[in-house]
Length: 191
Figure 1: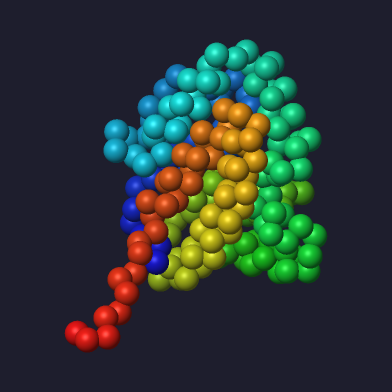
Figure 2: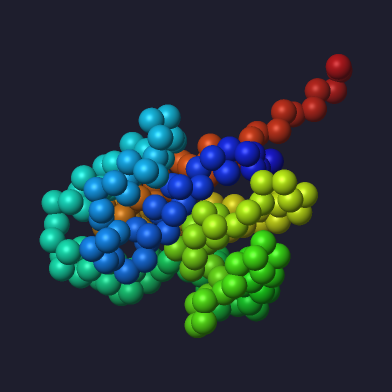
């Protein structure tokens, strides 16, 4: 079960994840961005700080080159979260359509030419969408988080093999999502 209140408290970090997963620009590395995105007890904070530290040892040109090399030329590092499971299958098209409907349901217009399973877009949706008192959120966000869990699982493993700083960023995202999933207590037969 998704803890929507917990997820809501992490909104600033989803903005950070979205910005860091887009093609890098100088403003994405403003010193205040990290501090504004993660409170002391945030589950993804440690990984985000490690990522930030590694990235700040590189020039902007090196970061942009690494981003392109990693996400544009490594098939295993695709930022499209349904790609790993479905590649180009019919099921992927159905999943993309469901995501698009979800975004529209919560007031997000899809950017022209972008697929709804693009990881930065999914993070931006979690940052921008207003779901706090919306009864539709529970069931619909369950699908969204399942897609994120599945897609980032494959992505984080590929990034780890490459020894990429982006490993820590995606690991931080996964830890954030994991903190928002409540395990349901198993029903006891003899209560």
